[in-house]
Image: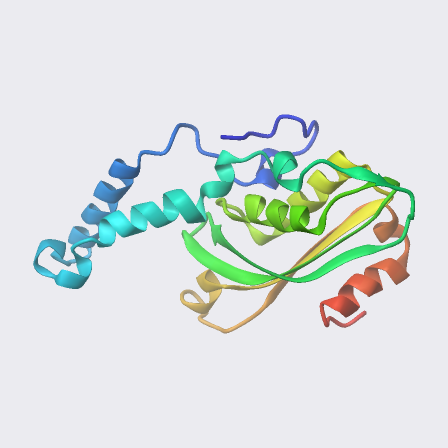
Length: 210
């Protein structure tokens, strides 16, 4: 499991809420069984619920929380030399993650960009970085900041950007119960000082420049 080593001065929440011990998949399944019983269901007498606790535990352990077992810098991959200093923008990356407040999923689209300052990385590395950080208990705002934090540390670019457009189930299915899209952004370096670069990312995401 990875912590926040190597990110001095940055809050741990930028990398999601990390587990304090190794996951216990059997214990997770037992907890789901107790939840179903407390909710009034008898899983033992219902074919469609008989293996639900096991399936839920496997899904959380191996899919929804798999990112905690990886170092995001390793996920990004080894950089290579690139002296072009031109905008690199990867757009339309679908992702899913899980909110720590209600343990509900959210799904969205990511737009990730950086301007090299001597180093670049393969496009698939950006996808792996996004998944590594998203498959944790994390907020959308943290996820955006985590992507730029890792890009800045590994590539030391002129600047980096991440725009996430997502639909949170904790808003859609509970509380105010309204369909909505939430946009979270993170900009560093030249993306903070150059409006044209920010606009390039917003335009790619189909968002207004206002």
